[in-house]
Length: 280
Image (cartoon, rainbow, N blue to C red; front, side, top):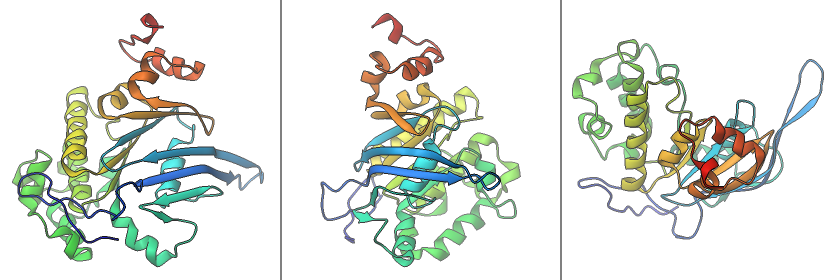
């Protein structure tokens, strides 16, 4: 990997890039992931022949109802979960051909923001202690910014540093999780239902923050969601998953305005203020 850095926001440094500008941050081809029921021995195909591409600075959404396979796809594609057949290339490296050591070195490049922010934070650690732990593990990657300035990037006051997770609201906790991801200067951020459970005003703030991070750092964003309004606010393209398969994919506006698949239409029909029905 290249050690070169590029300039991002004023006074900031972007994450290092691969030398090949045309290499996708993530490339998935014909991915299959199967799970076996331990009680019955029955095999269930959670992800079925799915392909997608994400370039640097691009935001791609995977949407679908619970159990559609979207989170399984994201975890497998980023080396954080089990994977079956098919080809996955993360930052130009095939996950099928690299060893555990190389995968471990790649993992700081991929940061995940989960649905439950309080569940992602150690209840015994203050925000400051959690950041200090990351800095100890990755001193070179994390030396680019102070704790106070980092929190400023996610619109949190410095006094948050001395609070523990139970002292944070849901929105504050989620922004702390985003700050922890940003500290590592990742090339890919995976946001798995990042606004679920937050009130509408806080949702809007978190989504604006994700948009800002993408545009100012050049990090790619993979958004996992069942909420098409959230996807429309942040993402360039969308993949609609149903029973493990991608049934429709394309630019968000195209899919939202002229959906081709019945399942996509069902998702859009549940979206408040859906206007696609008037444009068909």
